[in-house]
Image 1 (cartoon, rainbow, N blue to C red):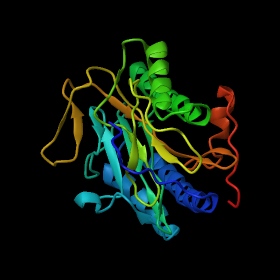
Image 2: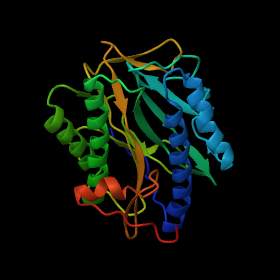
Image 3: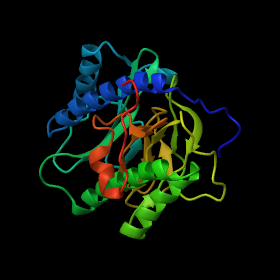
Length: 277
């Protein structure tokens, strides 16, 4: 899984520049999440995200990526990842994952959030999103305290199995990744325990940690648009993602405006701002 691709290590100055792309990504996602209401189309979410990129004169790392036609992926209900925004109208009770990124001065941010649309939700969807989000933060904490990339996936899986038992499946075909001057870089970041612990976690590393969980089986297929991935059994899915770095003084969540402090403090991890940021 890890292969021999070279991992890009960044200086503190480069990570500080990368953090600016992370903040824009976070604010653009804020806008897209706010737009995810009953009656909105998935295209409305894309326009909201794009508007913030334009405000900050930032680029999109999704638009045009292998021909992808939008600035975000909007994956609704049984759509796992890579759903293309369009005229689909969101309705009360939908669950949607919004995934997007910004490019600022050549540095990339990448983040995703799951939204439960409206005020009336299936409790199982709420559990799905909550467990996925919490598992992501366990993965981030493991990046701060662990020694190898494989520790991240172990932490994610342990939380999912310990919290939801067999109710939720962890997708294995789609994993996290390195990030920096490109959106997808070495190494792969699995969301499950593996025999090989993978590369060492070292200063200068930046990773996108993104668990994808489903309420049923983990088998997926790609629709005719060659992008949208759906569950074969029609079960609903959730994705949460943050870009995270290890700098000379500690850990920092690049796509969280507080560096992840509020979510990580209960886990005993205290992010430190990047020197020079």
